[in-house]
Length: 196
Ligand SMILES: Cc1cc2nc3c(=O)[nH]c(=O)nc-3n(C[C@H](O)[C@H](O)[C@H](O)COP(=O)(O)OP(=O)(O)OC[C@H]3O[C@@H](n4cnc5c(N)ncnc54)[C@H](O)[C@@H]3O)c2cc1C
Image (tube, rainbow, N blue to C red; front, side, top):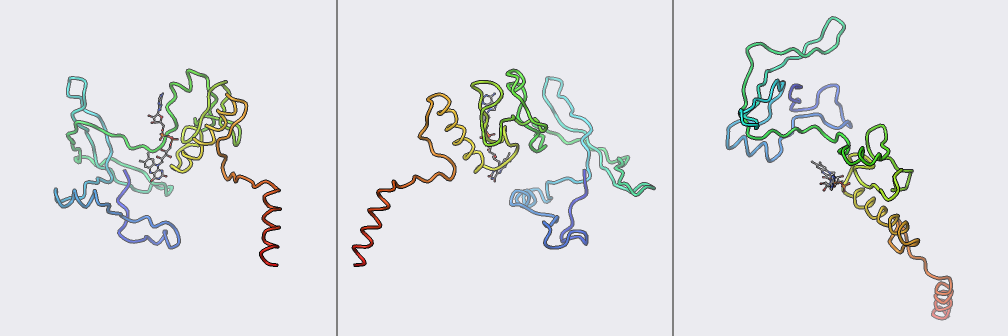
């Protein structure tokens, strides 16, 4: 819906801010070579998914929009008459970002959720308010990174092992196996012998 970003930094976006400029990824470049045009559409509004009459989509009706400031200096979006366009499509993917975990199972089990609809657990813990139900990764901490997914998966496994077996030998974050004191003393004696 917004205009395309500028080719170089705008005045209100100086270094060291993240540059909000037009980026061309290899996928955009490939489409441009094959079809002669960058595939991205800006300042456009989806108005309606058009049915093929047999339960599937056949395209989208769109219209171009423009942004102007009102008398109170607030941006207003207006549809531009005469710019209506139909895009044929067999499949429409909605790219909307992370909107929280799917609710069906969470609601069915009455699992407690936080204000962003993620599954709620105590800090540093992975058990939920429902016995036998544990949560880890994006569904617990919100949209995040693979490393957190791996870390939380392992920590949750440890907590589950402890819960089921009463003890665990699964690794803990930052856990370092400590040498027994005798081994340290033996090492100290050995070093003294070597230096003598
Ligand atoms: C487009 C995109 C790009 C990303 N790029 C990066 C990146 O470059 N680097 C990075 O570190 N992270 C990236 N991430 C984030 C990363 O993918 C996630 O943080 C990570 O996958 C979270 O792992 P997870 O195991 O918590 O959840 P998920 O990987 O989402 O796994 C959850 C699993 O549960 C399954 N599931 C859901 N409901 C049910 C059910 N009712 N029954 C059974 N199974 C169910 C799902 O099918 C899924 O397989 C990206 C994410 C996206 C969407």
